[in-house]
Image (cartoon, rainbow, N blue to C red; front, side, top):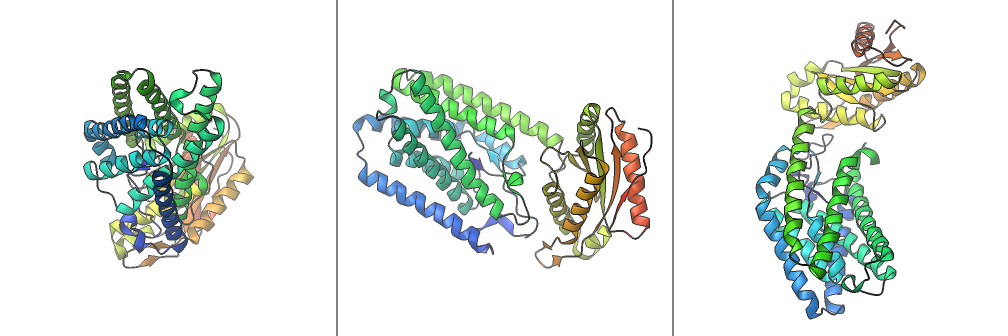
Length: 418
């Protein structure tokens, strides 16, 4: 998966810009430098040791031009995506990159990848260089792994492969290798840069992987077109541009449903999700409220309070399943729906969240916030078709009981009619 732009600083560290030399995480620094160095060494070695035939120069120049031209044409769309992205997102350059992997020797393919990332950095948005270099290096290593797999599957270059089922299977497997290798390399870095996070939180969404798979598929068609019918390149460019616009629309829709400060579902979106889940099965609901949050705003300012809210949101999300709807209900209050979870397991999840918040340390530029605590109300509906507002009311009542009985505790609501 190619990830670019929109990286959010780790809320638990408060370090601006994700700059490499300001990272206190030495293993992360070593990992990033190792990936960069290995990609550079393999590229130089391939350029020096693998012959470059004249037949490869034309597709190399065409793919290089395609990547640069498409960056210019899609620049307005991508700038809007960058401006509104609060997390890493998929770009669509795999179209040109995967075509380069299929058609060119690995060193030339690496040059296409490096040029694409570098030009995008110049023309779209100048992120911290370390971040862009690492993304390019990870993609380059994935490209070398893909080329190696293709070499094992067929002794012929892509241009000479027969158009049959085994060739199709080999190309699909190569695309899968490219996607998996890139995902693993990037996920390790994101996970290492987010202490207390989980692998699941570092991975992209299903929609991200579907988009990346689609761009790889277009890359296959582009490589085929350059071999047999180059004019089709124009159609592929148009399809890619339309896909890019559709991705922007999807991003706006997701942004409208998401709380800007925490990345969680906003109240209306969370309620809609909860209604859908409750229509299918019983569930438990957690209502979480940070204790004495006003003191943080008073002592450190509202911007510091936003950093704390993001850290708490990430902590809650790390303690539940990936499909459990988590939302911000306003202020310092959060809600979690746990479908098909009974009272005992819901109370265990709530206690785990309470303990994780209690241990949380949030580093700010001038201080470190510790000693956070939360009161949690739990409401349980064992049957389907519950009214979400009643469940919320029951959890809210239990939350107030937790507040009034000393805070920093979990209280379950008594069973009522849903």
